[in-house]
Amino acid sequence: MKQQAWNPGALLAVILLGAVSFTLSDPFISKASKGALATLYCNASLPAGSQVQWTRRGVSGDKRVIVTRQEDGSIVKEIGDLQNRLKIDDRFSIHIERVDSGDLGTYECGGRETSLIVLADPSSHTVSEGESVTLYCGDSAVLAGAGSVRWKQVNGGTDHSILNKHPAGNIVKSVNDPDHRYELRPDSSLYIRKVKSVDAGKYECNGIHVADLKVLTGEWFVFVLLSIFTNI
Ligand SMILES: *[C@@H]1O[C@H](CO)[C@@H](O)[C@H](O)[C@H]1NC(C)=O
Image (cartoon, rainbow, N blue to C red; front, side, top):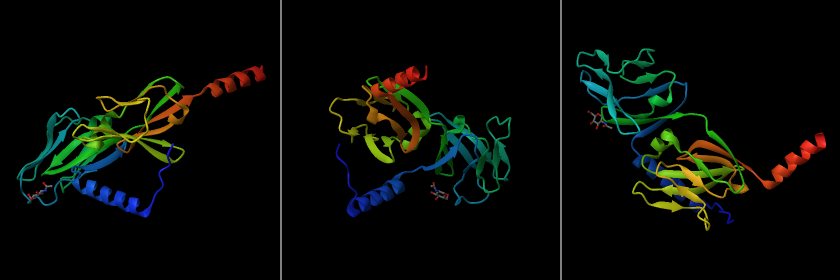
């Protein structure tokens, strides 16, 4: 396997590219762990005393109004909130208590958009060498990608980019894959066939740690069998 060496020029290019893609990537991304508090800010430049609404667009594209502030300043919640998890402050920011996956989506207020990503525990997979596995990107990471999909493996502290899908739809593999072991599925999941021991590690979809893969090798079975027999 070819090792990629860092040189200052490449590093600078990555930083510049990062800055460009950051400024181009509207909406803002706000990440909250499941159960935590999330705060979403409205457009601060709106004239006082104007009627304004918060809307949320779910991953499937459905959009609904959450809260309205009338011209007289009164606040009307447009969705059921029996547990009173939504708090609205006098700057018309929304504070969502005990965030759960149902809260994820793209929120908009006065033209300012924020995608709320809800971080949950990564899924764990254990497969034997030679088997296949499907790793799900999941709604939060799909939302974080804003149309692109980036799959990365982190093994022993080193990042290995596997493939990228651009918003236009073209898929670019960055891993050497002569046996076509890696496949991006339409739901953004990563399908790996004929798993090898080097596939073990953490997997990130769009920068979010979504899966852990453990690979059982032949030696592992021998080791387990040996330890069972030597203990008896
Ligand atoms: C915020 O509101 C101002 C004033 O209405 C408007 O000009 C601006 O475009 C808004 N910002 C965004 C991100 O829509």
